[in-house]
Image (cartoon, rainbow, N blue to C red; front, side, top):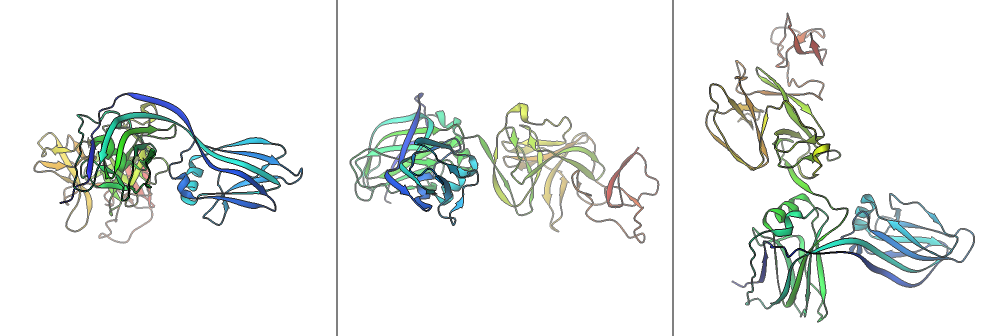
Length: 442
């Protein structure tokens, strides 16, 4: 089997930090704008742009009237950047625009077009502040297919501090025809999506920057490190490059049932993700009441509802996270075995039976749960008299009752039902359903 030259970086940090402002010249010369002419920049130039980065233009107004410019989305019919308005120009100056999170995404997706009238532009630059942490430096001659070089380190080092939006930067020189560079998952040695590079042929120093774009890649790098592999170049340095706009995050997956249990070792903020977390605030015979929240506490169990997908959910500070004082859902953030129910402690696993009915089912034997899952625990048996599951009642829905029992006759709007959908003639204190809405009887 042919082998690529490998550099395994389950990395040991050398604690070399350097915070610098990096300026890239996108264009220089003399561009005279009349009658709203344009200047275009490909989206590849903005593939690693972040919120907080800056675009700077050197501008001269050569007409006193109607001298202005705007930033547009190049590959999107020249629509305006969302967070940008036309700028009037009446002198010579350096115009500086700070990129927002919204426009960073637009620039990476569409590129940039500058539309202007009655001005002259002599330079356009892109700049950002970065902190580069040296993970490794030296000289590795990455030879042909039959040669193998490897360096192994005893820990992940600074990669545990990586964030979404950071880069793994690989520096090399002496590239020859057929040069290839891969940034790979250390577990499988397979390149990450967008982790393959084919550099130009040159003896000069070059570098590639692999952007950590989502929490799935982030967790792989934080947990296992990375592998950089390739051929026909001389590798000289690998760095973790961090930015002010990068953030820690957790990958959250919801399957086709659009509901799942969840737990994490980190405090998370689900606002704006399209996913709603719930904790188990109360239990009764046959039901568990689930209360919605926006933030989740570390080492707590939750139910999540959302469309089937894998989400990048930001980590938040403890001060911003809500702690549920009563929660019958227990965490298995690292995975493990949930013991069978006993006479004093009852455990329920969230599952779907052979008929496709989802709910909590009582454990009669030990059960292994995967990482980031949760289970229900009570000190009394809440299994219903009939039926094999504990049903879910969501506090933010009109009713958590899936179907009302109408076997005893025609429904009346004023009838009162318990949370299992059974008609109650003489309700006592508690939560019930009447007229399709929840009511609490004191």
